[in-house]
Image 1 (cartoon, each protein chain N blue to C red):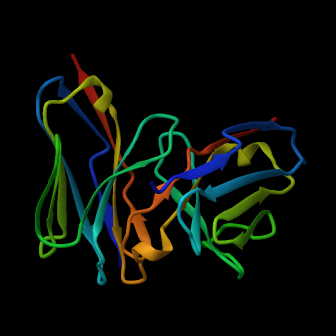
Image 2: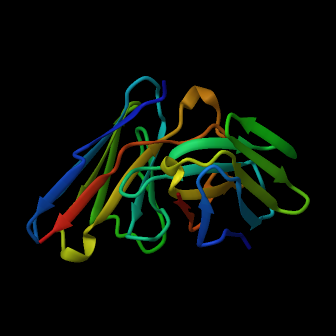
Amino acid sequence: GQNIDQPTEMTATEGAIVQINCTYQTSGFNGLFWYQQHAGEAPTFLSYNVLDGLEEKGRFSSFLSRSKGYSYLLLKELQMKDSASYLCAFMDSNYQLIWGAGTKLIIKP
Amino acid sequence: GAVVSQHPSRVICKSGTSVKIECRSLDFQATTMFWYRQFPKQSLMLMATSNEGSKATYEQGVEKDKFLINHASLTLSTLTVTSAHPEDSSFYICSARDHYAGESSPLHFGNGTRLTVT
């Protein structure tokens, strides 16, 4: 079967670093996406990993290990505006996105 | 680039009426668009996949006669919630993928429509 799991909520301090983990199980895999969603708004695309390793985009980095069914999103130099939900989703063999429930990130001053 | 426009952003309607939501890809062509529903503090739930020029594919448990989808062109898909009831109140979000960017390219989301049925 297919499943995907990420923590429900995390708290971090402004200026710090936080890592949001995502684990998944699937027989067919065509990449893993991370999206950011502020309350009451639609998701916005952050990153896409299809090969193992780390992809860096400014303050945000995303890592993938296909053999372990594991990804993480790393946020550095946290800002208050980073308070949001972070959704991971993998693309299965039919190119359908399977979504995690999202991790609500709370940033404290 | 890759902008998806969704209208209206907010709608309040009376129980029993119908509401149409439009989703447009402004600067790319989308043969496939996706309609999601999201209840408070829950993740996105795929309702249906809209295919240009053909019938939509509905997820299990989604009533196709209640949620009518039309994808008449490469840039426009509409979702009509027919005979709306208060339990249909939710945040509806459309998304689209650039046809020429490939099947593994990211989805681009509209801003969502918050539907409240009184």
